[in-house]
Image (cartoon, rainbow, N blue to C red):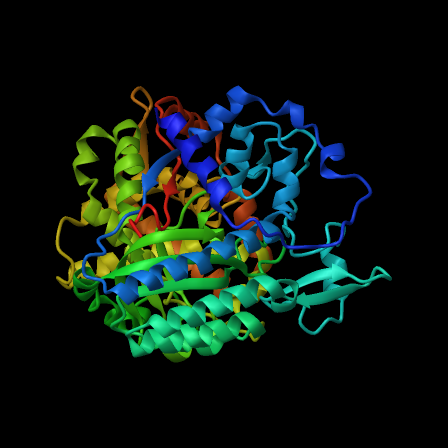
Length: 558
């Protein structure tokens, strides 16, 4: 029944999503149909691949919302849906051409999950014979461009988050701003955001939507980022535009389009708001020399809990996001702070459908009592909060950490947030600010490594978890029962490993040590044979890797 449900949900999504196409001139003589062996897509293999995902319905209680607020949600979903179209282009190219060439519904379903013919939960392995490896730079750069050619280029905006790099008629590199490449699409999004602003009853939300609508037309997102952080009492929220740089694995420069439509849980958010105030004090206690913690986190940082009702684009590709930390603009972060959004309903789905079954397979029976949703929620929340710790700029004038570490910056930043999230929990638990058994957080964290490492090497989160697992293994932070194949945390060594890896990551970031990070990823960012075998056990047990969503206005009863 599950298999049929997944295919039905996604086929409906394929038929209902926006059908307009982002245009680009062809660059090869052969068409897609001539280049790839579409008949090699194995139906049985597609069944196995699709079963990596389990369906989940994105619902929320709308009873407290006004008529205008419900209309606004529908309008925002329409705007967010356009992000699917833009991300398809950024990740692959022509969705219409790919879909028309695929031979059967199952392969179309799987391509739609992955926004292209590469399996994102299997290191971007192609699932169509002849398609070749996924370009590290996705569709942000010319496929024949080398890193050296890019570095030699004198283009002033080549490292901009919001430009495509292409070739002119002479073969020279040129840049194309997003708002020009996607002129028709962003114009539609801008109009929809203005419509939503007209419906807004909250002044802060109205201002943000108005500024965001302008940003879609000129790629100047900073004013709307500041306005977004100024919002405090809005029950509806939307995150939309080119945001994360995970998709650009060539340099990590280019932001990809995505959209979330969210409903704020006011009661949960009230419970969480106190924790952000501890950031400046916790920054001072980081286990690194003073130079690596000299920046002070913005004091306007806040935590909120939401039910998410729509995912689109980058956040919906492969493994799904369950928490958000934005804005990414380092200047905004230092001046104003960030907002951490905990996606409560999506988090609950992953805990119940994935993390609990994993713990029954791989965690020592005596420690399974420590696997709790409260610990999972807190670990995820403090991961996002911990993005605000450390430094955003290198200590020796190399510029931002993101630009210095290029394609490795995302994986290292995710690893930092995991480590410092645990550091925060440890410190706040000592102060009595967090209740419960500290071991709950640690064992749930250990189980979470197995969950996230299954995302594979194409995911920054997956790569960060591979590094952490191997590092902790070397420091005897856990033991494995050879007979049962289960893992048991050594709590004392776990704490030591946590401090050691935190120091290593923070130092690499502060030094902007690209070569050092590349070596760390090369040495530790791999799944070794024993772990691979244990992960295969999870697959054989039928435990899904991630979720797919049944979502939209019909699901919400709108």
